[in-house]
Length: 138
Image (cartoon, rainbow, N blue to C red):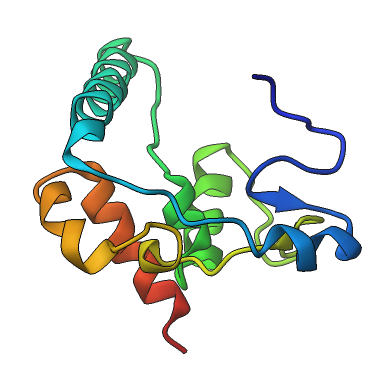
């Protein structure tokens, strides 16, 4: 399956008309049978993380969840510093073109999340869920 980078994919869209229909998608039915795949994907992530850190090249980790958090502007500023941008004062804030379809928190995306969140305990996914839950609190 390929991402459609020309306007929409499963999590984002640029078309306001499609938001209303796409927001009604069913929640993901996460169960303990999904854990092996989740753990495999997280191991792969860690392997890439360690590989990139060992290259000796300058490296700065930033997750999607970080960019969706309240600290977004601070983190973008840190990334710009990492990239060598020196004139931060005149650098405009970044604004995305995609529209939000779903709530950020995992409870809104995963069926019976309260019953299955213990399965995620100790995973990067659990950390991501905590960060995303903070994003929806306003």
